[in-house]
Image 1: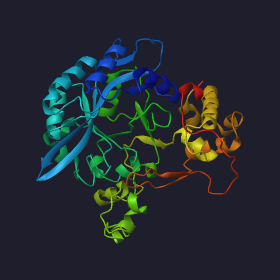
Image 2: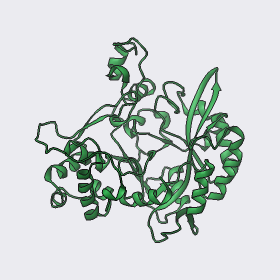
Image 3: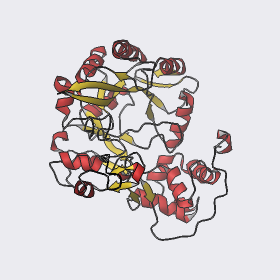
Length: 409
């Protein structure tokens, strides 16, 4: 996984701006410095070897802070955005005092959240910090096991610099709208890539309409919660996330908030404590009913990766199979990129390229007619597109991928 390959698949996905991630790691920062060049006057970067590319990189990272608050250990992940490689270096110089930046792409820092924000903002007022995947049980602002009940307790006097929060795969805007204290905060939707594959990169994204494509325009749209420039977020169905429902993976137990409460958050099989899901945690902190929408809310749409939709329709065991790739390639070649397929192509147009059942599945996901069996305790949710039974052709292809060129034209 390197910069050029990320840029290649970002284009296939339909992404215009993607975060570099991990600029705090010296080796990855070195690759960023050697591979990217700044697009003059934008605060964004392009791959030096392909300056004609329409894929831009923003210099970003994620860090973990561990600290004590009111005699409890708090473990919080934060996203950092910065306008240049030079300011990234300055941030690294400051943060290296609080942890070993060479150990992990997401370094663990022995400092509290307000101190982190103070250090980052002193490096440049154009930097931005916001809490990552705010509802996951571990390592998040509202996490059930080591989080807080409100933003102010976490960031204290530095809360004035927190303008956004990341919904994460296990929550979406309607869940966050239930907390009135978040009304002034902009909800952003990003997802860790983990790899460059189309079902990993850009699972969630933000849609902007900008007069100029630049770091400053993006940051200002977020800070001001500007609906004219920040149009919507692209979300996975939160049930698809690994921690949506309360449960216990070892015992195959998944429970809705109501059911979990009935069992006292104790696994009915092994009698151990359940991993509290995001939906239950939202219920604990919400001061509004489900379905409430604030007046100034930025819109959203729910999607799932095209590869996973195709995999589900075929009954394939993995998106890596040759048949899944073949259908994926046909659609992307026809409609330019994955997001165009998922959001814009009509069913009739899709049906002219691929089997009608695949076309129908894409439209059902787009229109919110697909269902998801909720994920729990580290297990992803299961996509259900067609509840009615239908015949599937056998998938004889070898699942293991040996060479990228075997699958991508």
